[in-house]
Length: 275
Image (cartoon, rainbow, N blue to C red; front, side, top):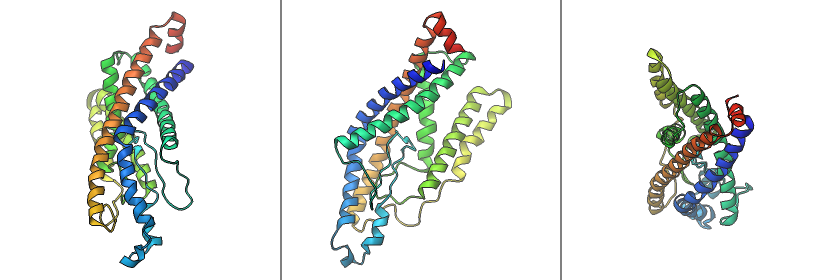
C-alpha cells in the first residue's frame, strides 16, 4: 500500500505542479511582477532622502515579503519572495518559473499523499465512494480548509504589504488549518452531539489572528502608487483564490481516480492497498 500510494502521490504532484504553474503564469505572476515594480523603484530612488525619507531604514518596509500561496498554498502553493540585502532570489523568466514549478510540485506531492491516505481510510470504513463527484467534494473541502479559512484572517499579500511578523502568521496558518480540518471531520464523520464540537473548532482561530501593524497597508510615499498597489492587492486575492481552487479540485479528482484504479487492480494489488 505504502509504495503504491507514494508513487501515485508523486505522479499526481507532478501533474498538479505543472497545471498550477501554468495557471499562475497567466493570473498570479503578472500581478506580482507589477507590484514588485513599485518595490524596486522605491528601493532604488537616488533622491529618496530629499523628500524627508531615510532610505536605509525605509527600505525595510519593502523587504522580506511572504506571498501566502502554499501558506494560503500556500498558500496556492506559491513561493515566498525575499527582496533585500544579500538574499538570493531567482531571476525573472525561466529561472523563476522553474523554481516556482518545483515548489508547486513538492507541495502537490505532499498534499496528494495526505489526501490519498485519508481517502483510502474513508473508503475502507465505508464512508467514501470513489467517484469523481466525491473527489471534487473532498478537494473543495481541502480548498476551504487550506486557503479560504486562513485567507479570512490573513489575506494573500503582494510585495510591499505591511503585515504581522512572518513567524506569527505561519503558526496561525498551521493552527487554523488544523482546527478547520478537525471541525470538518467532526461535523461530517462524528455521531450524535459530538458533531457540535466541530463548530467551535471552525470559529476559534479567528479569536487569535495576528495583529496587523498600525498604519496603512502600503507605506509607499506616492499616493498614486498606493492606489495602484491596493488595486493589485485585490486582484491578487482573487487570482490566488482561483489558482488554489484549480489546485484543490484537480487534487481531489486525481486522487480519487488513482485510488479507484488501485482498488480495481489485480487481487494481489488490491490486498496490498487494503493492508
